[in-house]
Image (cartoon, rainbow, N blue to C red):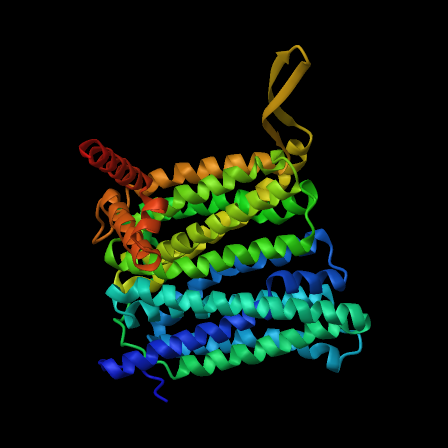
Length: 498
């Protein structure tokens, strides 16, 4: 095991290293499934967390991003990203293990205050390790393979996430039904298992090669200010921050809206979420290939408007006639959202890595992460402050149709509560896409050329898989009509001649 950076990495070492990075991603994803999201919320509620404490738990991942400044200083001081990443990822796993072990040592078990404190340190150490890891991957992965590699890694991680989430949810429901007294113990065991898998990921990182990076001699705050002085990267920061603010003004409240306004059971909401993840898994490989072949900007310019439409459509789902129509509408929204977010998340991450100079990548990427985290943190707080106001104000637009039978009202618009945030958030997200045009990316082409290429590729795959006639019915019905008309005219000429 070599803990020092290497000047030259052979193709064999690179191949082995990329496989280790994928394995690290899978073990870390399993840790995230067991120790965050729905299961963390369920555990916090079980031990008596208040709404404010739940909000604190939700804000921790973005609040602690500011500690990535420490990673910049350490990389500058020691120039060994592998050791920094492994050390702080190891320290980040210890609080997770502690949450799982505490009930076996202390009879009082884990309190909400202890849970928040331990997760606070877990996120601090994780952010420091993550910043060093980003810089490390920037130098390790060849630029022309960046999109393909991370789309493959993300697809495998998302597949594992869906599988583990389903299996774990079924297991937790079984324990709650048959052994309700052991429910808290089940959550603690999940944290123990997550911590162990997290340590496995550290071991995999230690075996991954690290290219020798250039020494950074600038002072910390001088280095931190460089991304802000780079006009092109500054335009990316403006776009990404506004995009994050717009999305976090709306998307955190989708589940709340479905539960409280639409009255959907939790099982339905989980199923819709899985539908979105599956569509993301199936589409991310395509986006990765196109981001390498064309540009990340093109991916965002196509997926961004699609996602904005999905957000705004949420505001009108309450007007869907009947429960079945509502579920169909939500299913379509979630599947299209999965396709769009797969491309957006991949492209935004890749374009930040691509535009960052090699010798200062950690400063550029950390600056981007901190500004985006700030926007992501304040957006739901602002939405929460305004929620009560919008809850008591409705916007209704109807058309009256008079006939002999009476007056029929057709409702065109009905906004109330969270619906306002979906419209506002979607509008701001659309405005942020205007800022994307100011970002210059090497290798970018006209979006129209990419869409033509995608359309031709889609048609060719349909023809290969379904046959020419079936593909034309789906993709180009006019061609089928022309053939039918031509056939009829030929038949008519034949009969006339006879």
